Length: 314
Image 1 (cartoon, one colour):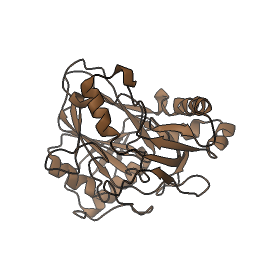
Image 2: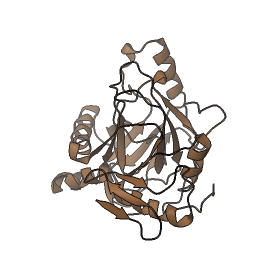
Image 3: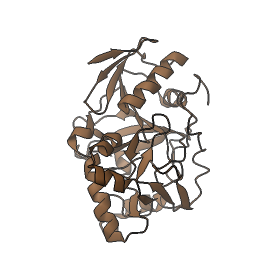
């Protein structure tokens, strides 16, 4: 199905029934006017992930594009940025492989509202990114489980085993992990988050969610595993194959993603730029709160209702 924007030249083609749309008409440089940005924000609210093909931009162009949706974060709270580009994070296979389900940087008080990924080096096969709709997952829950999830809060942290247990790390991986946890963060977020622009509810968990407040580690793992299984149902997942000249924009408030490690030793690199987000709000109207770690060097706190900046704004 193709849907054409009424105010711009954009067209949106759904990629799955529950998440994802391909965008055409934005132009290879992704230089947008205010009406186009408004149309893209509305499409992002609906589809959760937007795919742009045939683009021709560099790091500067990617940052300009991301700024249409709000103020940028720096690259990461602990991991170094691309040299000379403090807002750009290299997602490089040579620096490890993030093959676990997660939402970006949920261990801070206000995680990014949106993430952009741009292909830089594409492997000859494999290396796809999976993106899942946390809103569809919430809707899939049986009513008793949905009600129960709405009462839960989870501790998110960067200080845990990540994708590889510590005893399996080589020296380079141990050094990377030391950098990743050089500042330790713990933040309590609602398990069910209310989207500030649409009012949709989604499961706000993923790999950094390690414990349910008030429950033991074992009980927490059982509940998080149960809820996570709804997020990663195949019906809720977009499988995105990378190609040169491609960018994806996804709503970090209501999705999770996973980088598939299926490309042998071939190089793979994406550059990531993220847009500052608001403090999550749960079904009871209460906000998240930080337990450990100051992320003010990484991200400002965006207003909950902030939707679109004018083109060129920072």
